Length: 299
Image 1: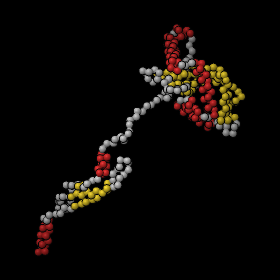
Image 2: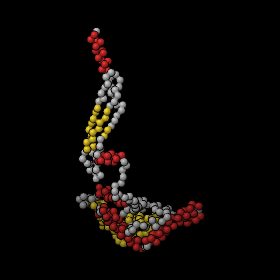
Image 3: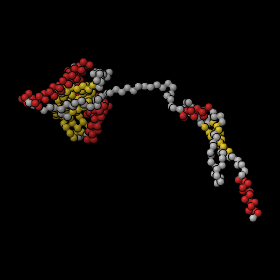
Image 4: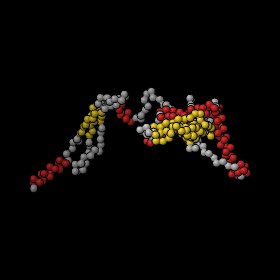
């Protein structure tokens, strides 16, 4: 009994003694980022904190009051902290540059040409549908005349000179297609048409190894079916593209060969009469602009 009382008194005495607060210290290595993008030498920083207050009888210790003491942080460490919290700024010497985008082609044919069914004289002038048709035809012709007028005023367009240039383009593009010169076709056609011609060449190469094409000059006939202007600025009509739909009727010679050089299609000794409808496009405001193939329509 005496021994049990002694142990109980000893435990009570220990519980009333002031507890010593544990002290914990840790060391960290801080690397600062230099202004030139490099990393400076790491600095050692000692962080010490004290834990106070002892919780419940189960001897669970919690940090109810932390005191963080950092002694003499180096300049590089402070600058690294400021860099991480501050907003990013433009580097010295940087300047804002306005992005200017220039349209090289509309990428579509405005009001593609379609042949209109002929109507009789009596139907045109003595029926309501005929009057409506006459009005529509007049509007289409006025649009073509307006586009030609703007083209002549801006570029000094000449019908005779343009037809000569159109025939040269017609022959050049067909020849480049026959020999498969992809790079030269890029300059003679718009971006969208160039992609179409390139895909057409890939399909042809899967069927034939090579082809022979020849234009029999002079061509039979050439005429303008439609002229359209695509304005991109309503306040400045000179900032526009003009598209001319041209009909070619010409005699051609064609022959296709396989990988062994054997003729598989056509006959280069025979002349074939061909009718093509091509759309040529030209910018009215780009310096040094020239005519390019925009589309080929089905006759």
